[in-house]
Amino acid sequence: MRLREPSLFARIAQAASIQAGRSWAFVTAILVVLAWAVTGPLFHYSDTWQLVINTGTTIVTFLMVFLIQHAQNRDTQAIHVKLDELIRATQGAHNRLIALEDQSEEDLAAARAELRRVAEATEQARRLVEAKQ
Image (tube, rainbow, N blue to C red; front, side, top):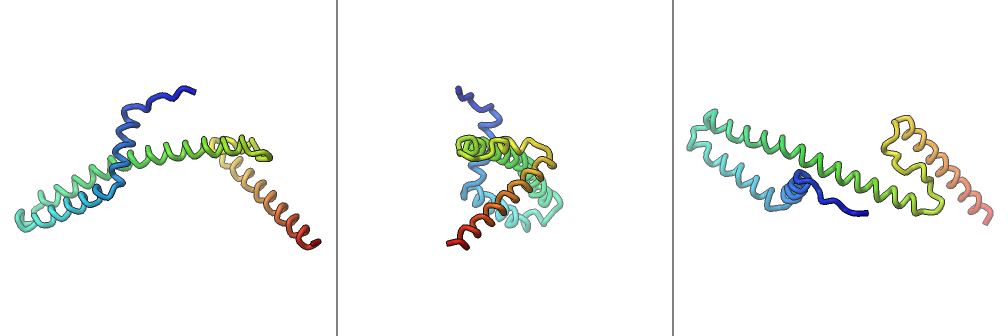
């Protein structure tokens, strides 16, 4: 399987989400808020002074929502592929569970109920074996 290079957006989003999760990003955000708070008396706590932090935080929050969602979608897809491979490679596993995330809510509920029944039956069988010993 030939791996394709991620899109420009994917590369930028990945790099930005990695950097946003680092401690220096948090420290920078704290310093910006402190600098804004310290300048309050200088600007007489004006509406413009308040608008600066409100606008800045709104823009950052708006953009971070997309970065976080992109990172979460990518991680979820990777986890599903890995789980599907584990199901495929595990002897005795139910291959119909592969790509279950693409099924309807009813199919998910039915699969969950069936696996719960199997788990309960397995537990009952284990108890019977232990009781006979």
